[in-house]
Image 1 (tube, one colour):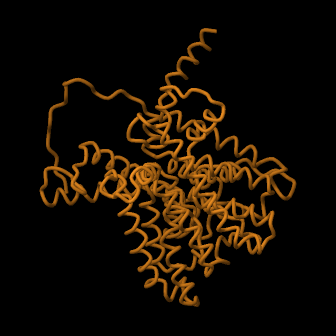
Image 2 (cartoon, rainbow, N blue to C red):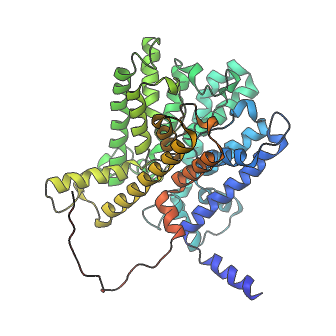
Length: 453
């Protein structure tokens, strides 16, 4: 009884970061068990645990890397499990817990609000439940609009029932930046290549990806202030400006770089749609409308850079995040100009922002290098392919040059860990696992200089 009471007390005092890490792990494990069941697979037979775990991790961490084609391998029930894992992973299980509490009219206490604040990356505890309500409302509104638009194309093509299901699945997958698709009915692992010139499908999916990748705080700002940009938070201004640049510039670059590569043979309209989609989807959706393996070396490098940056903090996207990269660049600018403070849009960044951005980006890059090293040494594939795969997993992108299915068991375990750390956050995972109290008070170590640069 004493051991039970002690364990219960420890559970009550669990940190938000540790709960977030454990919560995602529990959801992944449950999803893997469901996908192993014969009723989830068209063959009527179960699949190996490692493959089920890989698929569940990819869905929950909204990545999109697959070892099976979703349409040809899984039944409608299995596809439903994957879609629910995507929705849960995209919004965060604590946000869905708020939905459950609202439906059952349960009180949301201070501890739950603290966990929710960490889950949605809110800047403050006050108003976090209101933010969660808006997140749910915006999610269902945008996904609902996506279903209606995609149904216009899919219902005439596949019939009412199948068309509506396809519209729902792809709307959720796109909004949550997951990249799972059901277009294996044309050809396994084909993604959206059959719709490369379909403006309705490509633009709808692109819009869902961008809205999902902007982040919850940006939605809240736009909801609160509309078009009054001057009232937006600094976070929102950086995300919006960064998003515009990270779509428009790569779009033009893809048009130039891939004109004789992946875009060769396409008409003018198809070429522009494909270039736009190639600029949008690496941050971090995982769909593709052209064969990724056909990208030139320059196109592959540009895609990897986009995967490295990713989307916005507190969104359904992964990567290092726009704000993290922005803080690093602003810090460099301030250092070169010998400014005392790091500033943007007439505001001074807090002193801890640079420290946090440096730690997060360093952890991310170390993880990417370690995962790439594992894949390269264990698979024997080229450094371009393995680095592409490593950044795709850690950035929860899901794009692949067709090598995921060639990976052995050890490589798949590495990719699973990469996807998990990419969704929860490598820095968050490290902080959850290594909980040591920092030095407090005024006592500090003596200072000594080292040579840098």
